[in-house]
Amino acid sequence: MSCALHWNSLSPQEWQHRFARLGHSNLLQSYQYAQAICPAKRQKGRWGIIEIDGHEAGMVQILEASALGKVVHALMIDRGPLWFEGYGSFEHFTMFTEALLKEFPRRMFRRYRFIPEMEQTPALDSFMTGMGFTGTGQPYETICLDLSQSEDDLRAQLKKNWRAVLSKAEKENFQIDWTITTANFKSFLSYYAADKAEKGYEGPTAETLMALARAFIPGGCMLYGRALKDRQERASILLLKHGAGATYQVGWTSEYGRKTGAQTLLLWRGMLELKNQGVTEFDLGGINDDTAKGVKKFKQGMGGRIVRSGALYIG
Image (cartoon, rainbow, N blue to C red):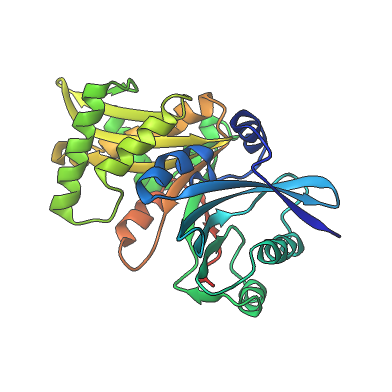
């Protein structure tokens, strides 16, 4: 078999059309994510179509940073590449990686950051090490929900405690609003920034969220949901769509919202809204046991499957 990489050969519309064909995608490989992130970080995107034996097999988005006329050069592949139906085996991944390193060989002042969208196995680690990469940290983990199921089946797979909180929240008569305006989104950023500062958890900055909004809103790819009670915002969430998938980005809840399960209700309603819009896979975002055991337990309550990508490799 042979592997060829074709860079920046498609228009944004052609790229998005192919991205929508992927059975599995993620936020970090989406075109809008690059649009949002690159300007602030002084990076640029590189978009590649992967051909195997002359057939389109997959896609990859690489973010690049350079200085001194590319004497200093960094390539960042986060949770890629992604594959079309019938492709994505370990052999296909190794062919892609070998082709990439052949086109951008290691040299002084060139560095790679690579999180493979491939299950972490001894074979993957051995291959990456043999290619000159050094693994750091634990594999990336997230929880994904299959939204091709019926609403009844989705509800049935909820864990008992999660379903109980949802039932309680449904009796609170919250008004769920999916309208995005400049005023209410700025209010959300203010609530979120204050909550993050008070509780000290990790998460994107308000500036990053605003950049994501500018990139995702024009194509109808951002869902901003609010749970309102007595005309006050009690909780809110931000969901981002990418191809046939979507990812939970951030959320915020007041003390009243926490006690009444407003965040749980928003996630459930958000999942159904995504399903109604044709999304088939809902990524609940990264999980870990070191710093956010409670978050992991909450997300597991929705009954999805744990997806493990490769570790972070530096080369």
